[in-house]
Image 1 (cartoon, rainbow, N blue to C red):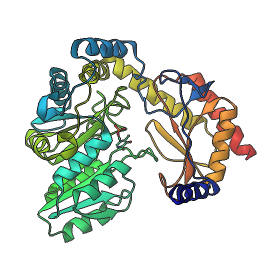
Image 2: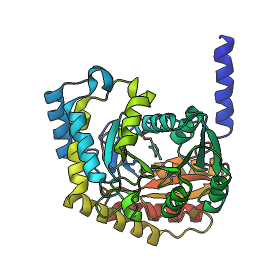
Image 3: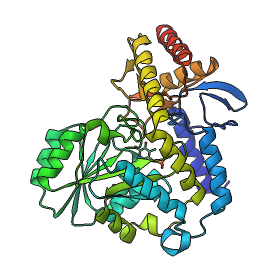
Image 4: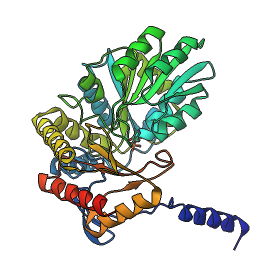
Length: 394
Ligand SMILES: *Cc1c(COP(=O)(O)O)cnc(C)c1O
């Protein structure tokens, strides 16, 4: 064996010995609570399909219609010839939807949320910028901060006092505060109103990654900004469209001048092939559902399931984190115990992922339960019963 391959093999064995090796599981059926995975039917609590739209018949139909109308691929990047009428219509619909929260709103559609974050921070940063990053931010924001070449300073989770100190001390011309709205491994919300007040006082941009809020939070599904009643020209909003919206991609909504800057300067946007227009076409239907009565009733049902789960868990050693969102993590601590718990649930036909470092801090390995509007009360009852029994016997 070559020395290079042998070196990798050794590092992989090290991951095994720390219970940190990850494994791909293959699903054969559409994303739904009941899914066939590695040949077996399971009840799943892992997806980010919070509203149950990933396999919605109307959206599937719209995707097929989009493909027959616009073809399979876009053929080029947006600034060459890949910018289709379908992309324009989606961007206009997203801007109109988000207009109550953002002044002179314009929206830009990206292939993925990961790419949107790299694009955004890369285009806003620069060596003359100070970038203040929340310590539990998503990996894509961390990587975007690195790409931005800004001077990055990390503030502790939710610590607005520490952030204020950093902002006061900053002499940079450009200041950016960057945060997840809903923290993806904890399910809690950033103190967005306080963060915005600080940003307005110190002339800083507030970049909000609402991957887990868009479609889910707020009366009309406009996400964390609507939930917190916020509106400001300082806000740069990123929402993803592969989670609650059930398809793929992401968008940035902000003041039209900011969006025009991204079109000119965001390298991952400029140098990448535009997404298939059919996806944008399908997303018009997602947005229609999110904004309408069906979205509202799906959000209500999801909220009821979250309350039901929290009411029915009786844990003592394991810790259910304080979260009102669809993300309901049960912190176990040690990697091997978290893996054993996930395996025991799996035996019972329940699919809940164990999340370990480096995704979460050391000694906080957890079961990350996510609920969806496509779950039923009986599904949640089954999960709660299994978790209560498992902790009592562990
Ligand atoms: C999922 C996620 C992303 C990435 O979005 P994709 O569209 O899946 O690439 C970015 N930020 C957060 C907080 C996420 O949870």
